[in-house]
Amino acid sequence: MPLFWRIFLLNAVVLIAATALLLGPVTVSTPVLLTEAAVITAGLVAMLIANGMLLRIGLAPLQRLSRVMTTTDLLRPGPRPAVGGHGEIAKLITTFNTMLDRLESERATSAARALSAQEAERHRIAQELHDEVGQTLTAVLLELKRVADHAPATVREDLHQVQETTRAGLDEIRRIARRLRPGVLEELGLPSALKALANEFTGPSLGVRNRVAADLPPLGTDTELVLYRVAQESLTNAARHAGAARVDLTVGRVAGGVELSVRDDGRGIGDAPEGAGIRGMRERALLIGADLSVGPGPDGGTEVCLTVPAHHRSR
Image 1 (cartoon, rainbow, N blue to C red):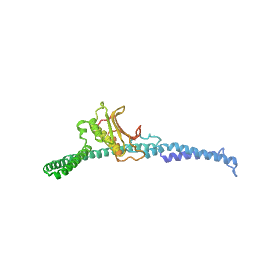
Image 2 (image 1 turned 90 degrees about the vertical axis):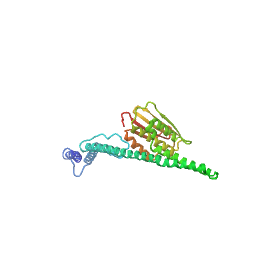
Image 3 (image 1 turned 120 degrees about the horizontal axis):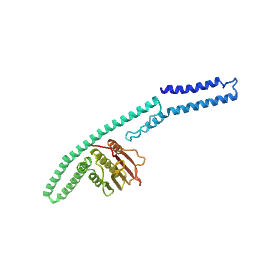
Image 4 (image 1 turned 120 degrees about the vertical axis):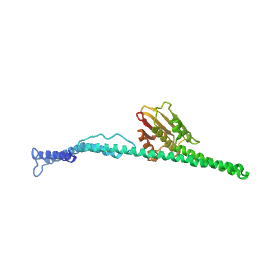
């Protein structure tokens, strides 16, 4: 039965019952007696209360659906609203759940394509930095060395300074290329890649402690790449924005599968809105069916937890 007719019939039943009472045992005199006015007033209040309760019960599923619609975030999938009510209300909730499933599926597909293209572009840029810019700077270093060996003593020191500057630039190019394309992940696996990543971020102002369990289950290529990228983004945020002095990077088994935890002692995120980095981590987590949480750590700072379910399989 359509929602309009259901509400109409409910109101009609209440009004018909009230009219029957006025025409039957309850009568109205002219002029209206005080007792009759009291009876009519009480009856009106009773009708309003009954009508309000019936409408509240009938439209409650719509109110629940409205709350879900205002809090839905495709990057944070949650439970679907339970199908309640009858007729058009139940159909509306079912349609909303179906639409949400389709939107999440389409977003996951588009995000997978975008991230795949991003990884391919990173691979290409890293390759060009290594093969083109790196080789060019290496040739410049060799030429500077040759010129310095035959240069007068008055300019030799300046040439040596240029050599050191060029060598520092070459090292920076190689570091950027390693960040863009984690070759150690492909060649040596996740534990070695995370250890190299921790060493890369460790410096005078930041200490990174890396602990990777030895009994990790076999992980697919996609899963390892997501774990690495989430750890990389978390360390980048800790180094650039958190003002942290120490970071603990841990990977181990949990009841639900495998968990990556990156915990720092910085200033925390507070009420700041999530930036592109965190949203990017959420999109990567969705690709492998993982759960990502970002919040304050037990001792302050920020903690990023990525939990990969045990039932997940990736290539």
